Length: 222
Image (cartoon, rainbow, N blue to C red; front, side, top):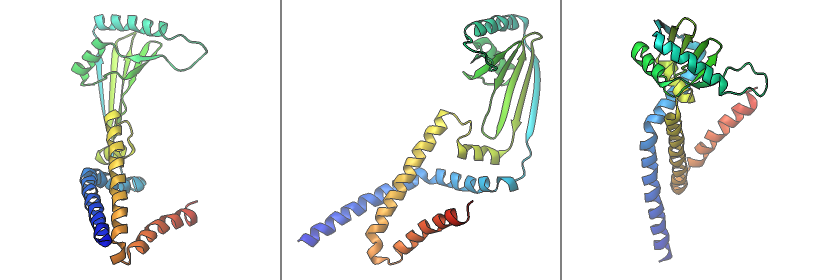
């Protein structure tokens, strides 16, 4: 009778472990493929030749908008008290009319990103995965410069792997993906433990998976 109960509990745990194991595997599958491939490309980044493509555009601000910017620049400077000498220019988002103008004229989406309001100039950095971009506005002449650098798909995927300039949504994805991987690994460990009695090589192989990276780290990494 006691053996029957024990077998019933074991079957119950095994059933639920298998369920969470395959659910976490399905949830993490695409992420595991992405992070595995980009792990290889990051490990061999120096061997992968990149050919960045640079796009440059120029435009001229309308006079009414330029006048608004000059007033906004004065307001930003006044709203940023300098308690001690600093080389850092004040930072503030671009005014809504300028954001709309940049989107319509240069296809630039500035959103609420912080721009640097230096003397006579506005500089807006626009870092992104797999590249970079910036907008510079001369408040004296109204000249606008826009530069976009695209380093290709491999660089883009590598930056996704590192979470570089990816935004809040992707950071949340990485956290959720990491939790799914933990569930996948822990349930897999318990499933191994429950089957280990019938599979004598289970723990030697699992131990080898721990021993190899430890020895490499201790003996070959300096």
